[in-house]
Image (tube, rainbow, N blue to C red; front, side, top):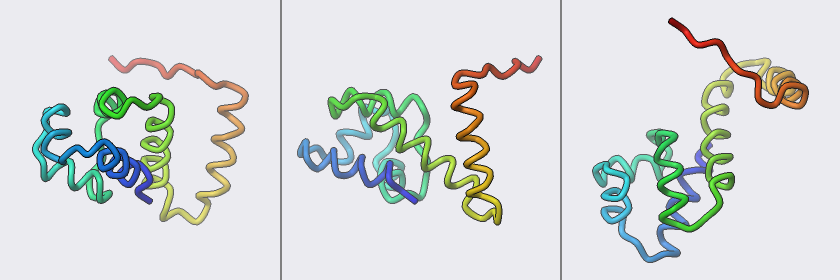
Length: 104
């Protein structure tokens, strides 16, 4: 699954921007951005915010794709992936902003 990377490439091309131009704004090299677009590497959370500014899109739009790709990568090889996702969905409905304890 690479919805995030595909969307980044589409937005970049719509804005007529080169990979090196976007990579420069993200403070990364061009090959790294290329790998993100192809789904071979994951962008960092802070990159999502910068990309939203570059492409003038709501942060929720790209953040949801970025997070979906991360979750998919975690569960894709598990036999109980769909069941686990339903449990997680139910938990999010009950406790949408559950805080995790900080580790010392």
